Length: 481
Ligand code: B12
Ligand code: SF4
Image (cartoon, rainbow, N blue to C red; front, side, top):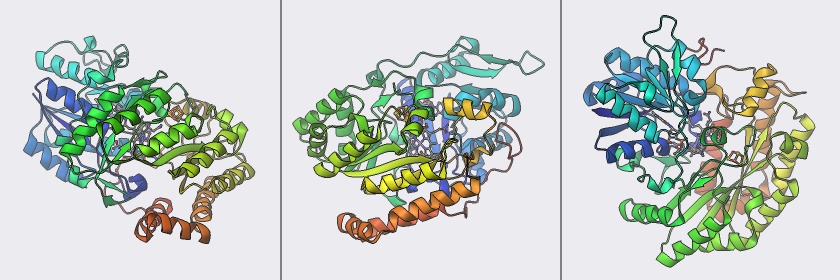
C-alpha cells in the first residue's frame, strides 16, 4: 500500500509568513510512523516546489499512490480542496484523507460539501493514520478507528460518522524523529533565503488556553514534552546528517517548563554541541538566570507574545500575563544579549483606536529587535471563534484570508479598512525610525535588515501575486464570502 502526503500549494506569496517555507513537522511525524511500520510513503510538498494543480495531477499519475493524505490549515483549506479535486479527477480510485487544524474542527461542512474527501483525521495524526491505513488494507471497519470522521456510505442523507476522540500521545519520546529525508530540504527558506536551519518541536499542548489559540484547542491543555535527552539526540543527528548550523524550535512556548530548559542547556554543553538556536517564550517564564543559561547554550533569538498593552484586552484573551511582566522580560533579554521579536494582536472586537495606539507605542518602548502586528483572527475550534461567531462579528468567510494580515472582524470604532491602515502604520512606525535602523543594521548587517523590510512590505502590501488562488470561494466549506 502506497501513501503520498501532500502539503497543498500556497495560494499566494503573502502566505509565506515572514518568508518562511518550512517542512511540515506534522506530516514528517506521521510519515515516520508509517515508514516504521513498513509502509511505502512519500511526500509531495507542492508549496515548497511551487507546483500548479496540473503538476500535482501529473505527480499523482507518476507516483501512483493508493492513499493521498493532505494537510490543511485554515488559510490553505481551499488549496487543499482544489488539490483533492485534481487528484480525484486524474485518479478517481485514490482514497483522499484530509487532516490538520482546519479539518479537525470543520469536518462536518467539509464532508457534507466536498465529494473529493473520503476521510478526515481529527486531532493528532500519527496513530489514527496508521490504524486507518491498516484498516483500509485489511478491509476492516473504519468505525473501529478512533479520531476519524467520514460519510456513512450506506446512508442516503450523507450521515456523518464521527468515531470517538483519540487520547493524546502521552509519551512523545516513543515517536520516531520526523521523516525529513522524504522532503525537498533544499527548497526550504526563512526570510525568503535558503537557509541552513533545521526545525524541531519539543512539546505539544498548552495549559494556558488563550482564547484565540488553535494549538491549545487541538493539542489539549496538558503540556506534553519530549525528554531533553531525546531532543538533544535529534539535534545531534540533524547536525551530523544535515548541513545546518541553526535550529528553530517551533514550540508554542519552548520555555514553559523551566526545568526542561535548564536540563536541555546543560546537556548541549555536556555533549559539546555548537549551533545557534531560536525559540518562542511567554514573558512570565523568563528569569535572568534562565536567559543566561540559554545564551550560553547558543540561543540567539526569542519570539515573545506581547499581544496587547491593555490589561483588559489581555484578560479578555485569557493570556494570563501582565504588562509589567512583559516589560521585565524584554529588559532581561536585552541585558543578557538575546535578540527579541515582539508579537502583538490588534483589532480584537473590544479594541479601540486608543487601546491599539497604546499597544503600538508600548511595543516600541520595549525595544525589541523586530516586531509583528497581527490582526485578530478567529480560527475554528477556538473560544474566540465561538464567541465572535455567536455574536455575528465575523465579516469575512473566505478562509484564504485568515492569515493574520487581513481584517476578519471589525472593532467598536474601526472598520476593516481602518484596521488594515492601523496595521500598516504600526509596521511603518516601528520599522522606520532612524535610531532603530542604525542600531539594527549595526547588529544584524545591512543585508538582513533589508531582507526583513522587503518581507514585511510584501506581507502588508495590498497586492497578491500568486497564480494558484483557489477557484471556488462561494461554498461554506471553502469559505464563502
Ligand atoms: C511552526 C508553525 C508555523 C511555521 C511552519 C509551518 C510548517 N510548515 O510546519 C510557519 C512560521 C511557516 C507558520 C506559518 C503560519 N502559521 Co503556523 N504554526 C506553527 C506551529 C507553531 C507549529 C506547527 C507544528 O509543527 N506542530 C507540530 C506538529 C507535530 O503538530 P501539528 O502541526 O498540529 O500536526 C499534527 C496534527 O495537526 C495532525 N495533522 C497535521 N497535518 C495532517 C495531515 C494529515 C493527512 C493527517 C492525517 C493529520 C495531520 O497530525 C499531526 C501530528 O500529530 C503551530 C502551532 C502548533 N503548536 O501546532 C502554528 C499554527 C499551525 N500556525 C497557524 C497559523 C495561523 C499560521 C499562519 C497563517 C500565520 C502565522 N503567523 O502563524 C501562517 C500560514 C502558513 C501557511 N502555510 O499558510 C495556526 C493555525 C490555525 C488554523 N486553524 O489554521 C497555528 C495552530 C498557531 C495557533 N496557535 O493558532 N506556522
Ligand atoms: S497562545 Fe501560546 S500560551 Fe496561549 S494557549 Fe496558545 S500556545 Fe499557550
